[in-house]
Amino acid sequence: MMKLPTPTLNPIIVKEFRSRMRGWRAFAILTFYLVFLALFSYGIYRLMLLFPSYGVPLSPLIGQSLFAAIANLSLIFVAFLMPALTATAISSEKEKLTLEMLQATPLSPQSILFGKLVASAGYIFLLLFAAIPLASLIFTFGGVTVMDLLLAGLVILATAITYGMIGLFFSAWRKRTIQALVLTYLSILLMIGGTYVIYIFWGVIIRDAPPRQVLMFNPFSALASVIATQNLQNSPMGLFALLAGWGPWAFDGTVDLEDFRPLWHYTLAFYTGLSLVLYFLATRFVKPIRPWRMSWQSVGLVIIIAILYVITSMAMFYPDVRAEIAIRQGTPTPVPAIPPRVLDSRIEFSRDSIEAEPTEEPTAEPEEP
Image (tube, rainbow, N blue to C red; front, top):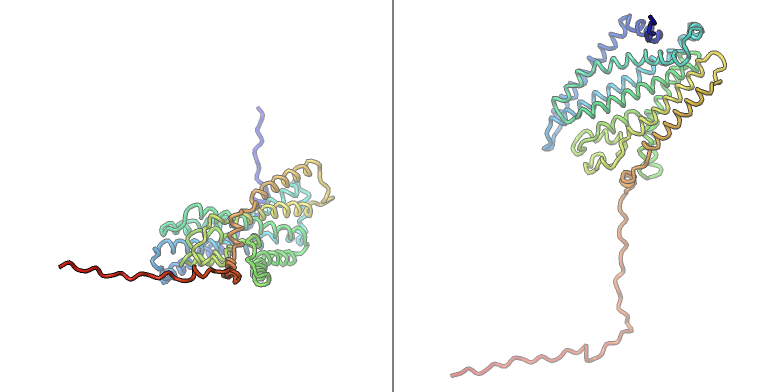
């Protein structure tokens, strides 16, 4: 009787998971993350009790603030912890002279990189899933929907994969771990801080509203576009509207957010393309011989993926006319003053039309005896 082949798990994933979860460090980081997240959320709750509500129900504001705090704190952990795990994945193998042993196995370069990425991302996903019971307390206050929570999780997961690929690319490119770490965190700081600098100086130098697409490289701006979807007036959510690129309309409360394409659309499209390009380049650096030689099947697959990505990006980046008009709309130009009409001095008037006709005074009628 023919025996069916059983699917086997990538051995690199098994090895990395066992080595990472064997010691106390992984559990210590998980415990510290959950305790710090709980204390930080409690501090936000106590702070929101002191916030003047101006007639607005306080419970939804507390729910929105807790949602923003938990989401941004999770994104900070992901943005700075994920690259540290992947930037040492390949370069450490080079320093220990064990990369040649991996290349001699039946595993392809794609399998090696995939195993390293999944093993690193798996621990990050564990941190995010462990915070779900704490995040579920948001729904007791209201103000946040399940869709908002799912979209925030989608942005955080996309950031984790993209930043993990940045670290994996530099780890495969450079031979020293310290070089890979420096280049990785320098790239991340440019994507986070550099976009805000460009956005601010754009408005100062050009004196015009900068395009929101400048902030699409920044994951915090993408997350802010998910968070600040409620009424912004008299609410701390106006700060996240500023981060999302809504500028002077943030604290006005008169913005119709349906006229704006969410910034996370652009961010997800860009992160997807960047991850695919970095994954392709990293496989070339891991390949032992003839790294840039590709078969016709691989070339065709790359072309198909590129075409699909371009079509999807065109649909995502299609300009929203209403949003562009709303963003570019400035102070209305005053109506030009209309000079008063001046009568032509050459017009002649007849004397009869100027002189007033004499009016007859009414005579009193004699009374009858």
